[in-house]
Amino acid sequence: MALLMWARARQQIRQSGIPDGRVVYQDTDRRHNVELPLVSPSCGLTGKPDYLVEASNGLIPVELKSRNCPRSGPHEGEVAQVTAYCVLVEDAFGATPPCGIIQYADRSWPIRYTLKDRKRLLHILDEMREARNTRTAHRDHQHAARCRACGYRAVCDEALD
Image 1 (cartoon, rainbow, N blue to C red):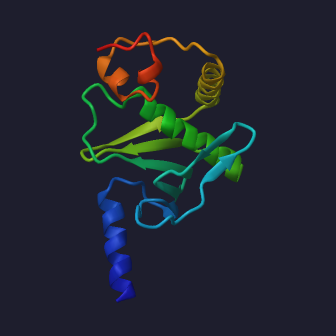
Image 2 (image 1 turned 45 degrees about the horizontal axis):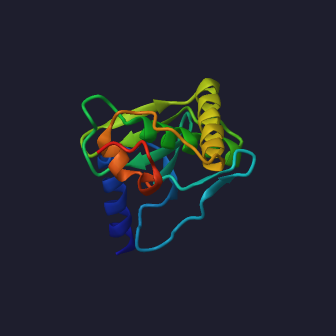
């Protein structure tokens, strides 16, 4: 029975587009809190990638999305999320991931990870912390849907309808 369950889980992983390698971390069972989060005290980051795969070229964080990939490619926030997972992997394990992966329902999208990407993410985090500590944050987009989904909409005087 255990062998059958292992084989089924392995087949699901293969079909999901996750790279070949050993899954060393998994946070896809929403009913149970399976893994502790990865933490980077120096960056002030905590997160739980859906999978962390030990591939031949290093540890690769994988984020699963239940929808298809947008025609224009991943959303900026999704790229930042996977980059944050790469930072967490680098800080927690002391090894730089070769990339991260967003696995959509219809395709896999690799997200590069370089020192420049790390620095860009850390800059974004600094801006977010600064905005949170400031009484006034300004809208930086023209998308009404983003405004409707924003947690600050009720107190924002720049919200789009």
